[in-house]
Length: 109
Image (cartoon, rainbow, N blue to C red; front, side):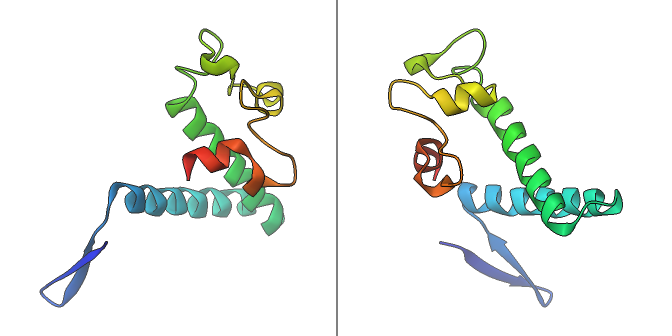
């Protein structure tokens, strides 16, 4: 639940950790999309590439310690496309063109 406080006429929100992560991810995505648009990519290409880079960064920072080149808990490797598609003990981590059905999405949301 977000608590709204007002100080000197300005509102501020006390965000939960999940809410804060969402705001940060959106901000990063917005900045990256603008940079990619400046490089001549279409808006759709820019958004898709920015989402890929954001996801790659999150996986690298948060997941590859346990699911990377050196260690594969549950036989799952998340540091490569082939590892995401192959998956681990619970099946493929990612289902192409069906993101919401992907095990990875189910586990992190």
